[in-house]
Length: 94
Image (tube, rainbow, N blue to C red):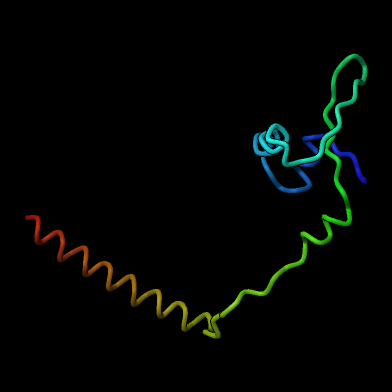
């Protein structure tokens, strides 16, 4: 088990300090409070085995086989459709 300060854990997990503090207060993270130089310091206990399991990346189901050019063309058609719809709505209100 590894001990990290709240700030170090936030940096490592790419989270905000506020979110990490909320997770600590709600009990979602294992913590240990140690007194150092007259101050209480909260350490987050990180189990490296569990962390490795959490980093397994799952493939995206139903991944599109469209090329970037096809995606761009599809999005351009959708934008044009939405612009026409907005124009029709504007004419209806005037």
